[in-house]
Image 1 (cartoon, one colour):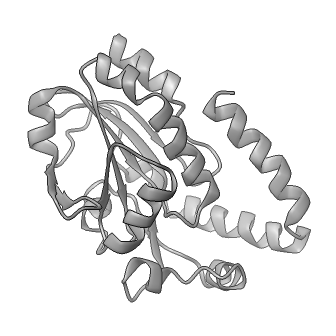
Image 2: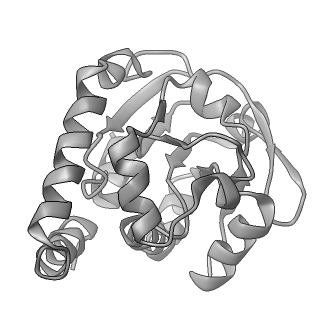
Image 3: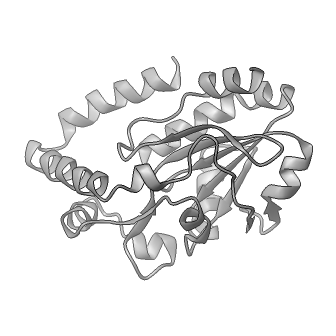
Length: 213
């Protein structure tokens, strides 16, 4: 199945497990985030991607500018290894990694998780591309993706056993909106996908088509 199909199946399964009143709170919180206008102000196709340098799961520094010297870069922002939809996305891109490399592209994922937790995510999903820790969300801020969770959503996440300040080694309940970018060698974003609905992600097939074009 494609990533899009896998996510759709997961949404159906989730609806059967999560109580209706909890789902309603989550939907309302998502609407509050949408109404901040964050999707419209986030970087998008045609914008220049800001350079950044972050450590990967092994402590090595990875620079966007250096990667762009080698070819286009596929950049994923994901919420954390605690998010099942993020794990599905990461696995799907790992499955398509050789196709991306054959096109001269490199793949980089950015997460607000602490380095220890990003390493756990890398090992759990057997990822062979770089997962970078943006613990203070500075890079997420540069791309206009950072938001603070509404209080109602922090309570829901707490009920799920998710403690974001602890996982991210950050004092606030903040996350990036899940996003995917294809960045050309001149630093221009040639494809973007930013969606408050974290169950919807950019399919690797669309990324491959954009790079081929």
